[in-house]
Length: 190
Image (cartoon, rainbow, N blue to C red; front, side):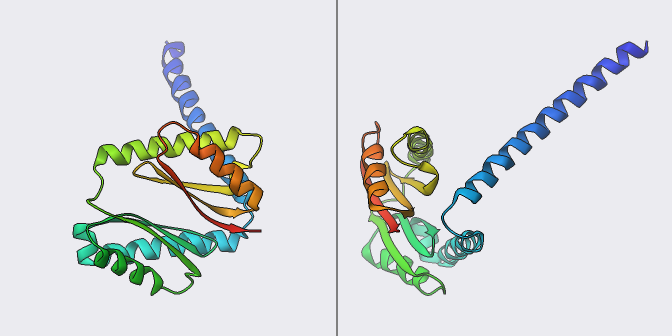
């Protein structure tokens, strides 16, 4: 009788341990990426904080929230704005919101004039970003861990702290991936 009750308990423990292993492996990969980054850990944290502050400020602007779809990304203090706004006025408003925050060292306003993308386009962009990251990580000619990939409406935006050779190679790799409409560099150079 005890053998029967121990088997479900043992299976539950194995499943729970398996989940812990995934968390440990995931944390290990995340830690490796942080350690491999050319920015200091402090700068990485500052970038995450600034990204959050800019996106929050953009969402607090009623016109931008209602009529536009805009996201901000920060790498080494350099800010990239991507998305769609129905007119130049809203595009400028988004830029002013981002530039009004402290610690924005440079801003790339890549907001396109047009209607906000639909959910299926955003889903496709997530898939395409994963595809580009995977190819960059497996390509021997460029270190994909130094490059941040953002995809918006099939346009690939590349950020990072790289050499000019790494920049050119990353663009070459990304532009040859099926589904990529355009590649835009927002790099800082070593």
